[in-house]
Every structure is written in structure tokens, then in C-alpha cells.
Image (cartoon, rainbow, N blue to C red; front, side, top):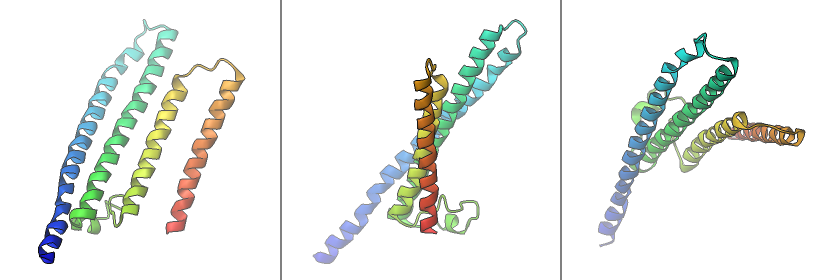
Length: 174
């Protein structure tokens, strides 16, 4: 009886395949959306060179384009988080991915050995998403006084500190 229960309990880990498939499909959807956004943004860049475009309109188009680039980067980063999550769940609960262990291409990013590895990989990519979002808001804001610029500088300093601490924690693990 105990052996049967343990077998059922052990095989229940396969329910994680639902999360792996859903994460993989969502990742593919995000890659698709970001790529479509990139193609559309690039197709509109011909307007930038129009001689009839005023300086103000050109500056506005530049600002909108930079914002779209940041949004595209954000989409690709989110797709990457979902892909790493799917691979990590599969490796932790279902089976090791032999080709990932042997491939030099996978490097250390896609090889997940523990829940801490998965957490660290996801945390780094999520930090990058937050940095991109911060950049997106920073370029779209209008700074009316020096206090707002001081807050921007403080935000940049905190982003730098977060990156430094992330890098410092990597040194402890290696």
C-alpha cells in the first residue's frame, strides 16, 4: 500500500508539464508579439527621413520610436523569463535536458540544477525588465524642476546598486 502511494505521489510531478507547456506557449506568443512590434516600428522609420517633417515632429517621432524600442526589449525579456521558467520547471521536476548539459550554447543560463538556480536566473531577467521599465518611464517624463532630476538621479543610483549587488552575489556562488 505504501509503495503504491509513493509511486502515485512520485508520478504526480508530471502535472508540472501543464505549466511547462503553458509557459512555453506564452513565451512563443511574447516572442511573436515583440517581433511583430519590431517589424511595424521599423516599417514606420521611413517617415523619419521625410523632408516635409518639421523638427518638432521629427523629435516626437524619435521619442516615440525610442519608447517602442524599449517596449520591444521588454517583450523579449518577458518571453525569455517564460522560456527559462519552462526549461527550469522541466529540468527540476520531469527530466534533465541532456542536450542542454552538453551544449556550449546553453552556457550557464539555461542549465538549471536546483530551485535556487531557477530563482536566480528568473530574478536576473526580472531585474532587467524592471530596469527597462524604469528607462521607459524616465524617457517619457518631463522634468520641470531640479528636484525631479534629483529623483531621477536617485533612481539611477538605485538601479546601479541593484546591478552591483546582483553581480556581487554571483561572485559568492562561483
